[in-house]
Image 1 (tube, helix red, strand yellow):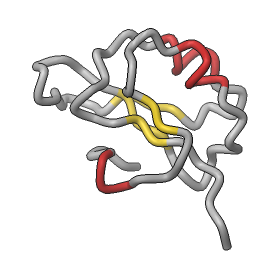
Image 2 (cartoon, rainbow, N blue to C red):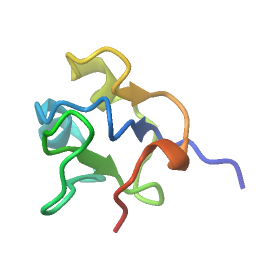
Image 3 (spheres, rainbow, N blue to C red):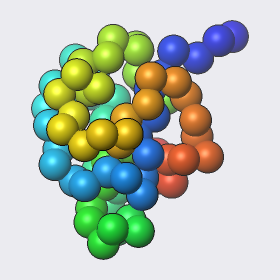
Length: 79
């Protein structure tokens, strides 16, 4: 089955969090107690829950932090 999930690139995310509130299916979560290469908290997408709507990508102000494809190797935290 083909995945329609987006990916938050853990080490590019700056922890702005606009994506968390805009997700209509609550597929985006904070990586609890973790920081990325930039030293900031970061969010991640729960792939089975994501419906591929693109709302997260449309509100993220950090270029390259969210990809319109599922690339689990770039997203460190998972449920």
